[in-house]
Length: 181
Image 1: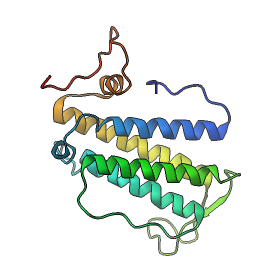
Image 2 (image 1 turned 60 degrees about the vertical axis):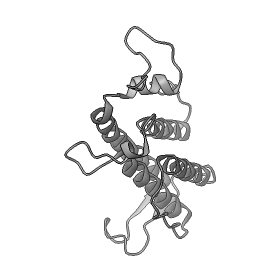
Image 3 (image 1 turned 90 degrees about the vertical axis):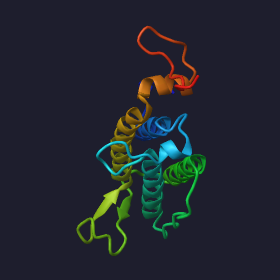
């Protein structure tokens, strides 16, 4: 996936393409980390890359269940390896994508479940709003993950992306190489 989002077609394509790009950027922050590094909290924040991935998997499940109007599946609370957390996030992404693909109209109403104290009672959003919210939330946390990753070992987003995607070295971007190699 290039560093810049490809040209998009219609609105649905645009929303899903930008969401997919932000998900990819968040996952890239974990590239090459050990389980212990993924749990580090090297900034003044209480966030780790593993926590961000777990949070976004949970967020994807929450919104997908609201769009479908079904009970949200529980999160697995057992300690997990980074690989398991990444696999869980990818599973949540696939489930969200399947739900969105099943929706014909992005204007479809998405009412909040009873007791959602974080929004006014009776709030109803559209599937379009949900996709925009997921883009926003994922992008915010991808930025957090960039800062955390850079604090761990100095790796930044574009060199990590170049390593993951096997870009040839460029004048301004060289693929990231683990420090011990």
